[in-house]
Image (cartoon, rainbow, N blue to C red):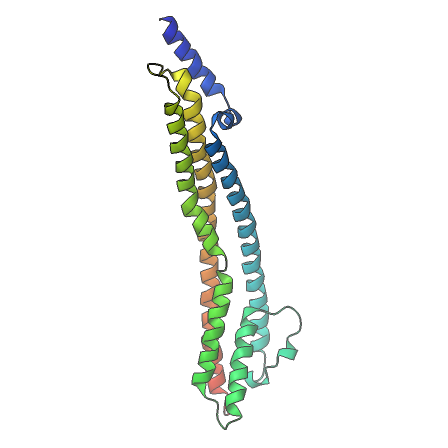
Length: 230
């Protein structure tokens, strides 16, 4: 084996033994900037996922509690916000809006269900926005992080080849720059892959809670109509 080939093998072994910190050091300024931005995006995504999970969990617990209390009322027209002290729930928002509309129209002579249903739909839209609030940021990070990593990689590879001297294309010259450039893609995938699973899980939970909310709203409208003449 020639001396040149022996050096190539040695450089490959050294490259295999080098760690992520070495790859980061070998990356250019654009690559370091991309990894820094990815780190910020990851921290924001983690905090957002945790807060959204806690929000949905609390809403589900409060909904279950208040649904039982509402169902225990002798008549839905006995509903009063003052009866439900403490932290409210999305179910109470729907019930409060619906009963406000029902009482307002009943004072004119008869409950007009179209007004009640419109009030329920508006409340559903508001609560739905709250359930899925800020989720678009997770979708943006999931879709944008790989492209950001690819940008850093392409930029780093261009720099590595751009600094090559004519006839000096050796592995020891290219390897550090290329490995540093590829680190941005690895970092981007490490950010995007866990978030996409968490995003789908949170979105499924939010939509599940929204389905329960719509079913509750439908039952509420039926109860208001059935008991309006009681």
